[in-house]
Image (tube, rainbow, N blue to C red):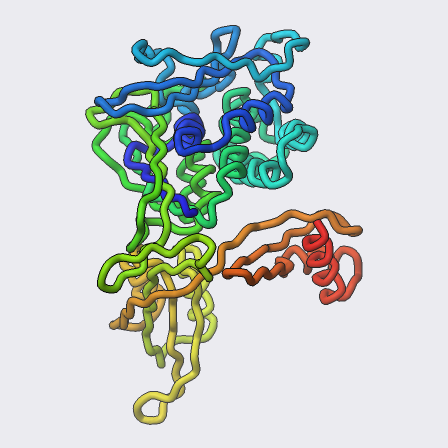
Length: 441
């Protein structure tokens, strides 16, 4: 099963959890996992809501003292003051432990990443859900640290460390772990215009953390004429970490749809739709490949090429850096001989087809070429899962790739290099150790 998030109304943490629950994520697994966080002072509302006549799942974290911990109103822009549709009664689940006192939310308003890591590390959720939740928090922490001009571990996460943000992010990780998708794609994130008010004053939309996440993670955004915020920092972090690709699948067969409700009312239905789908094989009648028969995913990419014979090696290296920053999937130089026996190079770039115009613009801006050749092609891709492992020398990163019944685990080179440098170990020994620990679990 693969997932596609349609973010025409933006994305937030509560909309994501709601849509994944509606898609079939295990609610009991979600509630048990959230109880194991031992966060006091809240309960969940899980029910149904109608948005422009569309029935959707509604997920709401209700703080029992009635006040949000967020210092900025933007973290839950889907306004909680909007009344729920009373035709769809809510279930009220209480994930806090019965013996815990309901402390005032301000006592928890400044959790940093060390506290977040401890809360998740000591929880009872699966290792896969822990890894994913921490990846989302770390992406959000980096974006907030840039917004506040502070080191990551010195940011006081009144935004990130608030109870409802923790529940939304950990809840998303639990739901994804429950569904276990082969891959995840997102549409561009639709965002509104204008400004929002936080405790520091009025700030523009998109807010700084969302802008930083879009830049750091290569998130495509679509600015609409809707007044107000549609993409929260939590939603952007979820998309940036989960996305294996951007844009709708080219040939797909939808198996199920989950719909999550936002809290604001827009002229259009304020919903997040998540599609469970399989690749459709075209030819005569459509034949949908079954999960057990799939040997790997297929998507469509573009290859851009240009021949260059009048540019220095230093400036070409700079151009390659800019191409990767712009979202190129791969980039290379091939030595060639051009007319008049001039030594030259062919610059080749692979990118997603929806990114080809942006990538071409970067090539034209940072190289001397005046023309670019474009070829559209299909590629087979492995499903990929980043892994964090604890070696005898400390934490390291690895990657698990699956292609049909072939499974490959590799060490992330930069992570291995850092350990090799700090420990004075041969790089090959470190990489072999990382792979061994990752395989053995």
